[in-house]
Length: 150
Image (cartoon, rainbow, N blue to C red; front, side, top):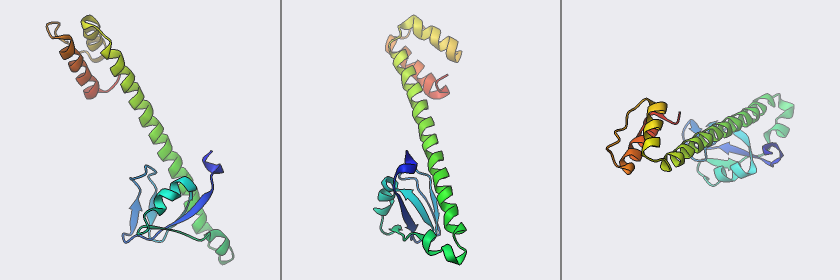
């Protein structure tokens, strides 16, 4: 789906020698004057920052006769790989968050005995039965936050 989207050449013109995107979640890194072919939806976000990025002319056609097509071609392949990796990491994080939320929802509906059994079986922790139901849930939520969803 991403390959069908129009590619826009974006050039890094910032003051620093390198730039790593953490704002839009792509994880792309740029060196000074580097041009990357980005999908239009992502390029639009980068081009909002005129002090860092500008639209670049298509370099492959202009540089084809000079023996430089390998240099512009490499970042384009690297760009696709980096975007795919960023998407994979985002998908993994979403799945992890979803598992955690499902576990929290499950614990929210448990009674005292269920909370005790869950804490003992899952985290090998003892929750005193003398605690109120809400305090027991809070303690089990703390186990989930501390040890992660198991």
